[in-house]
Image 1 (cartoon, rainbow, N blue to C red):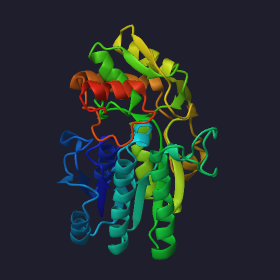
Image 2 (cartoon, rainbow, N blue to C red; image 1 turned 180 degrees about the vertical axis):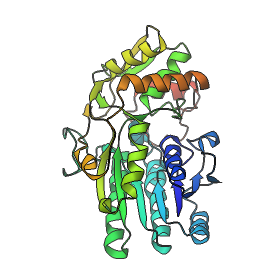
Image 3 (tube, one colour; image 1 turned 180 degrees about the horizontal axis):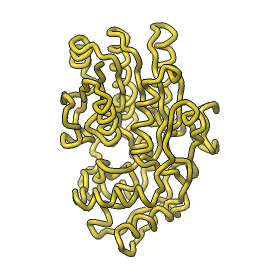
Length: 338
């Protein structure tokens, strides 16, 4: 059996690739390293550096390897930033997905896995359940939902079986803690290790359920390989919501420090977001979610061993209107703001 994992040098993708290898799949990782790292690619996987938007490369891989399973995770998952990088967002997250789906139709695979997001639900739908009508509020969520609809259409016309997963706020070892625009736990850890104040948009009372990677990657692969899950949509992750302020306390305790926090003007985002996971728990075996404190402890050990990272500011902003002042200031200091 052969598996292709797009985005497999990234955080979730590398753990998914681990799972395929553990199940004795010949595993190929396709990643352009724009957000992932070569060191994340598991030993035993074939690594191909390239973009999901490279139609010729994707076509060649599918023709040569004849994959049984595809798990498409490659994306730029900066939800808040997506308002200001619409073209970039849709090119990477929608057009790139279409490239992979086209290849999976031309070179039929047994099943196609796709990581969507709870961003498809929008606001005021908690706990978010798979049977509610999605109403995404940002271009990132719109792109993810569009791919879900496209996969449904590909099943109707071409018979392409797929499984869609909606994970949320996933954290853990191998996360890119240098990214300025996504992965709040990684951002906070990196700021702490650099001795900087933790930056919070709004009052810190936003609520999210934070999911350790060990509660996500194995469950998604199990569901993907289970025939009774074909052409279904599943929420995946933890169910207990925490405020950002509570999260700060857990991270600070793990590092043994008293944090300094800078509260910034609120940005346009969903205030409360957490999901129901009854459907996935009734479909495949799921372990009890790792408690947040234990997950933070594990990630803290890994982060300390790897040290802080501070990524570059995003240089290809397309829309400046109503951008959060903190981001605009960072770009101005880098000489990139108008």
